[in-house]
Amino acid sequence: MAVERLLRLDPVVCDAFGHCAELVPELIGIDEWGYPVVDPSPIPPHLMDHVEAAVRACPRNALSVQRVAASNPRRPIASSRVVVRRSSQAR
Amino acid sequence: MTTLEAGPATARLLAGLGPAAARLDLGSHLAVHGPLALPGRRDRHWADSFVGATAESGLTGRGGAGFPTARKLQTLRSERRRPVVVVNAMEGEPASRKDQFLATRVPHLVLDGATLMAACLNAPGISVCVARGSTAAARSFAAAVAERERAGVGGVPITVVQPPDRYVAGEESALSNWLDGGNSRPQFRPDRPAIPRVKGRPALVDNAETLAHVALVARYGPAWFRQLGTPGSPGTTLVTVSGSVDDPGILEVPIGTPVSSVLATAGAGSTGGVLLGGYGGTWLAPTDVGTPYDPVSLRDVGCTTGVGVMIALPAGGCGLAETARIAHWMASESAGQCGPCVFGLPAVAQDLTVIARGRAGHRDADRLWARLGTIDGRGACRHPDGVVRLIRSAVTAFAGDVNRHLSHGPCPGAAWPSVIPLPRGAEVVEWR
Picture (tube, one colour):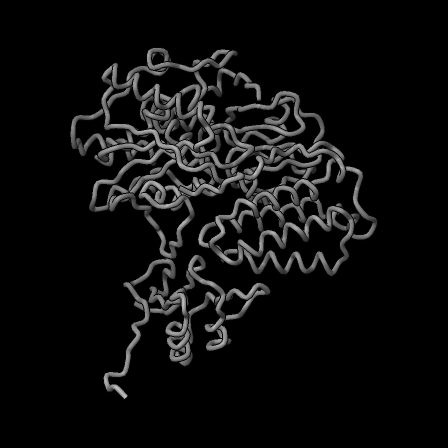
């Protein structure tokens, strides 16, 4: 089964900090009121690192990545919030 | 608002109501429709045939979305926990009166439908949701519940509850969130199908009119149901007709009846356009009023049925000024959660007002168009999308008027009094 990754924005918790659009301008624009406009198409693999950075950077935790079946993008495959990995070595 | 007597052939939901349209108590309800056949406990065979009959009838939801009723029921049936049944009689659309009409005249038909759904799903209870301001509807339902208890009609316990009186409070996720002890604001639900949950249980949320039809299908069968309406959209539907008509009120019409015939029954003369489907609905251009009132025919002229509402604009009236007023009111009814709705709706309402007043240029019109594209689909619920749809359809249906307003200033109709009812904003914003 082909799997795609989509950016999901929770518009209720989003407070227009705008960090996400700074980090992935390729996929996230900003409207005239400062709120993110998210590209609904699948995330290109080469942008995944930037997307994960944006997910981590959101102060409201409004952004997530969802894995979906390519055949049915509305049905998530599993709980798919990007796991924030912290370095195990304390610096 | 007066009530029209529907023709005998089309009186199904409204059967047994005389010209005075007095409430049918349990006795008269049973005299008109006969007793309700309920199964014994956990009768799979009965449940299967009930689902089958509902599917065969082709009944679709009458709350605005038009989703197939049987398919929603099937989804809930495959849930592990026993679902609860929620009757949605919130009727947030200010121009719609049909659910309140059903509640105050034929409450037992609605409760029969809910009772059947509950029996099919083995639900532990039914919640009937009536908006806080609709006192008469809530009283009638409560009285009906008491009548049923006294008569021992059977079925699971029914509770009448009154969520806040807000436009969006009847939205499925808002309603279930309120029933769950939260506020009545729509919730962000990215996954489909999104099944609302109440206290951990899945909830079947159906519009009051839909459930009244379910009660009739269970009694008279799917073939009878299909005798009226179109093959794709069978049955009758309730339409609240208002605006520039002599006899505003609620009509029961076969789906597929031309919009002009429905309006003629309500005593309309020539119209300047018809608002269909409520405040998140679409405008039917005056040249298209002969279109059959069914989803497929309406889609061909760029319209949606939405909830059963028709508002006739008088000939010479200004559809742009009317739409701008609605858009401002809809902006004020935002739940205030999502940026594109909070900031976008007042902005597009203002843009349209400037056009309606004849103070805008082509650049303003372009900005409005761009903003509509920006807002569409970006809220947690469909409230902003409804406003976008309304304004887009106004700009399409009244395209000639837009150009005249842009180049020659406002039309005389822009200064006429509105034919569209707008409730005053709540002084205290209540969400619980």
